[in-house]
Image (tube, rainbow, N blue to C red):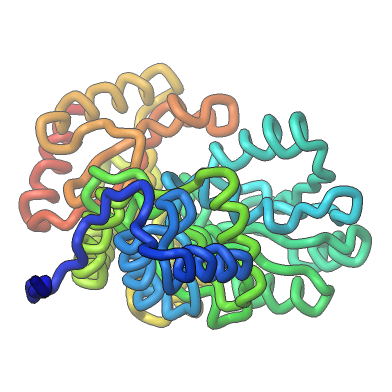
Length: 390
């Protein structure tokens, strides 16, 4: 009896570990084609290699990022491992240059895996004050001739927007590839590949999934040889997202643009309110004219918004009173704004900066808000009530 195809708008969840190949000719062709490491094969073999549900979600990412390929992994960190490792070629590997103001987990990965375990020659580029000096970057590029330059569009937690287009242009002119972690900006605000970046990484856990219930990462690009190298590396290291998570991610991607518009809108209004509140000492938000990289953000994001993250410092006399103010505020809003070490959730969540960043930011009164998509009036009322308790 012929099987009847059931019409559906959603890709099925293929939980198969291995796939039926039918006959000897098919299995021979499948394994022959596998040597080319196609992202979307004609015949699926094994879910650690490729999975149809995962491929469908990758195509959703490709539509959002407007790129030629995307590979999903189990987390943002595994995406970073895939992206970086395709540039490692034993003794032929040139130095890797990282901007210093990147995700803490990435910096730990650099120190404990790339340097300590793999012996990769790592160099870091540090800012002058709160911004990067591109003349100094040019000197480093000339001196090191690095394999690639790695940076984040928006720093965490101070939300400093890099001069991204200039960095990419300079690195490419000096013969270096460019890798951008674009988790904070997202493709809604900026698409680095269109400005010449070679690879873009996202912690899809955050805004791409956007519901705080999936852990995933993605590597995106346009160069087809890099795609094949990344597919091969992911296959052998097992950095594959599960089909169940891929299916949910694919569904959540359908609301990505709508969600991001609301994240940005809520954050912009809230940042303006906080900047004028008597119990706030300083607000770090690229959409405010007082932010040191406001003009860079305007140029890069082209009026689409300034992101959904706000960092602010509570006003109090001395470190002890600042810490007490932070504790009071966090407790006062806890029923509506929980303390969760993540970002990009549909509800607003917060993080205490000094508790996470320790010695780097001795700022006991500083709070990082991941602004959600709930009704703005309710959100503002909760924040104001919390500030009143200080």
